[in-house]
Length: 202
Image (cartoon, rainbow, N blue to C red; front, side, top):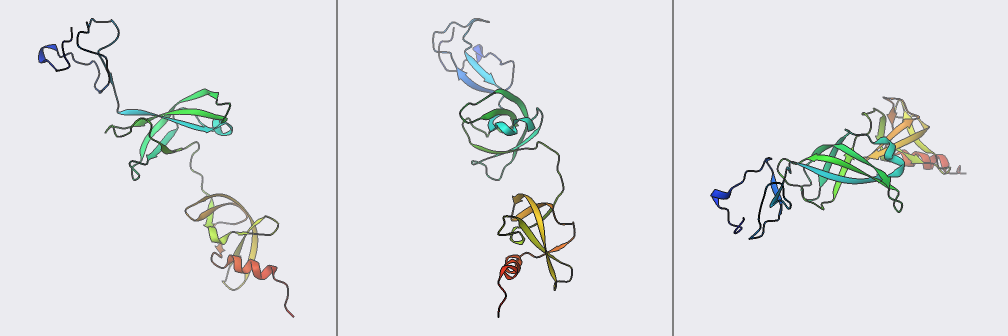
C-alpha cells in the first residue's frame, strides 16, 4: 500500500525500462498488487518521439516506410532532428483530402514537446541533378512561355524557350531548353526581352 508521495527507499520499485514518468496513478491509500490496473506509474522511453504529418492525398503514393525525415521546430530554429517514416495511415480525411503519416524522430535530449509545430522534409526519391540559373535570368513572355537569354561572346545574344521546375534560394531549376555550361544572362534578361518586343523607331 502506498502511504504518501514521498519516496521511501524501502519501497522503491525499479522500472523494467529506462525512461521518464509520463503518468502518476498512485494516490495515498492505493493498494498495489502485481498485474492489477491501474499501474501506479507509467514510464516511457522518450528518446524517440512521434511526429504526425498530414500530406496531400495526391502525393500519398510517393511515401514509403523507412524514408528519411528531417525536422525543424520553432523552439530550436538552428537544429535539425532526424528520423524515418514508421506508419502511413489508410484513412483519408474527407474534409481536407490529406493522409496522415507518422515518423519516429530521434530526441536523445528530450527536447521535443507534445503539440509543437514542425517543418519537415521527407526524401521520397534519390537526388537528381539538373541545370539551374538565377531567378532573374528567367523571363516570362507575353504568351506565357518562359525564356532565357544565352551568349557565347557576351556581345551577341539568343533567346531560348525553357521549361522550369523548382525554385529555391534565388535559383530556378531548368528541365529543358538549356545545356550544361552555357552562359546565361541574368541581370539584363528582362531588358533584352523588352528590346525585342519594342516597336521599331523611325
